[in-house]
Image (cartoon, rainbow, N blue to C red; front, side, top):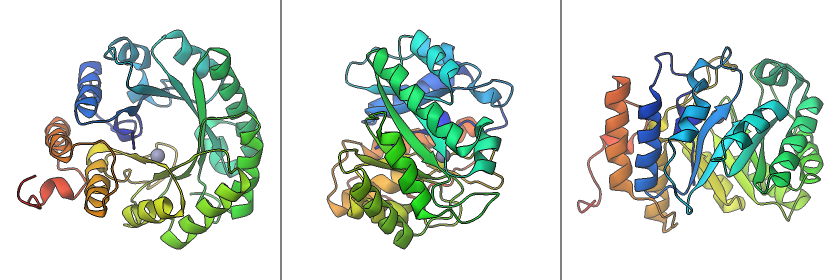
Length: 295
Ligand code: ZN
């Protein structure tokens, strides 16, 4: 599992979260067993003010050889910033499936975003790091509506030429359903069989956790999730939070899927984060009675 709360979770929050609190969130995630964490994004601070302290967050990251710190970047400039910190192990690039959302999210066409993502992956490799790509709006676009599976598969084939360590499909606005997830993950595995598949779901319409399960059964090997189910996208109207780490973990544990995460620890972090935000968070397991009682 990839913990995305420090980036996707916080980026849409109106109240400014201090750098120290972001670092504590990352430290708590590590204490709860997270070994891949999206720690920040290197984007224009005027468009995403919550991520303006990307370099400061990186400077405060704990020294851990066993944790992969991921920085999200949209272009070469962002990649250079991330690599210059010396603390980012993996660059996460984003290619968007539709022109309208690509323009809103990163100011370029869909094809332009593919080229940029390939350049970012190459920059990561040149620097001795790894790069991966997320295909945004893979299940639907807030502006254009339906997205054809063939478009996403075509993008994955093009992106695979840059040899990313992983390709993710993201349901940026939470419109996916398990049947489509099964179909798209299987087609992706057929199209780029040598590239591991990660999935990224938002729970805007309640299908998030069902989509995670469908994706894993279809062969996805990594799942993005956010402590408390925090999250959203400043460029996608109405987008709700990511699937909740504790909820996904509960499902996996009951199903015998091992993740290395510790549920009790993450529930404690949910309560801490909820206190920080001054409101209860969308995730459900942290508010439910423990089951079995020993947890
Ligand atoms: Zn997201």
